[in-house]
Length: 82
Image (cartoon, rainbow, N blue to C red; front, side):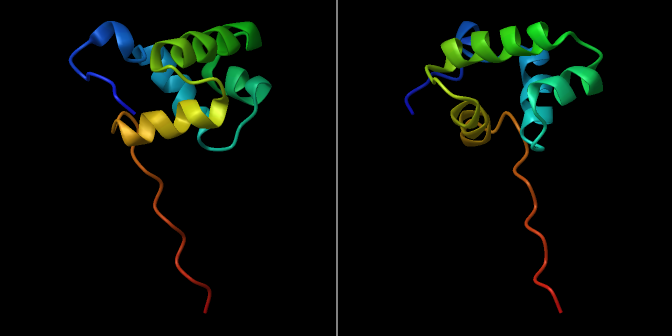
């Protein structure tokens, strides 16, 4: 991914990052909307606009790009059972 982190117009906004953080937890659009006190259409709009800014097409690519650019903290793996 070739993205200039100094171009703020290409990075997700704080609202878009809040949506990314909730979606990264495995929530669907409706669940994210409820958790963030937003309409489902607003969540979709934030994701769509962020996808365009990052040059990706899908939700998982959006979340992955946020991890790669260190915009979201990476999840801590669960310890092995036993």
